[in-house]
Length: 234
Image (cartoon, rainbow, N blue to C red; front, side, top):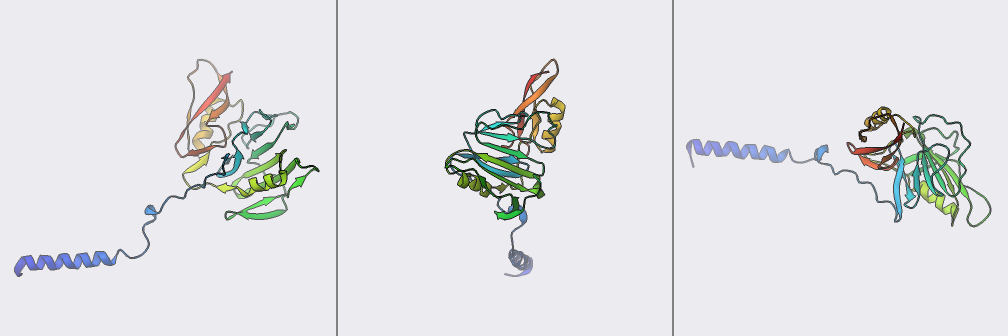
């Protein structure tokens, strides 16, 4: 093989050799697999605030209404956007997980869960096989705090297990933000937009206030997901 054809083949061979030498080394970051959220234990769901979630029994209700949970076993969510309400402390008729973005105050103990350092106040239980037991824990760096009051079987093991389930969500996932009960629709839309979500509201002819969201506050959502507001008469 001579002439131009031979020269062209020689150039192609050299180019292929150079390209093959560039394929060694790590793959580009864009090809890295997405980090998956571990499945919660059977019978539970992920629920929390900001990027932090814990495994909550599926049978527990969710409430953002001030002053009292909506059911005996409830996840009650508030945040810095929740205006202070002059009402007595929540009186639990059952178990309550209070999730908030506010600081729980000084928590003297530290532990690590899935590589995340959290602070807690230790388990406190009353006498009796069904408790109740309480446990405060928080991730201050991510503005997530949890106050757990549990009344049920093996209460000490239950509250410890919930703290040990704490998980920080990977990029692309978040939790539905807490929309204060009674907020104006425009304010609710702004809060959802700040969280990277799209708010939707029913068309109404007169002012209404927000009573909740679908999905509910604290549940998982992907960036850009639509969240529907539920409203009451203004």
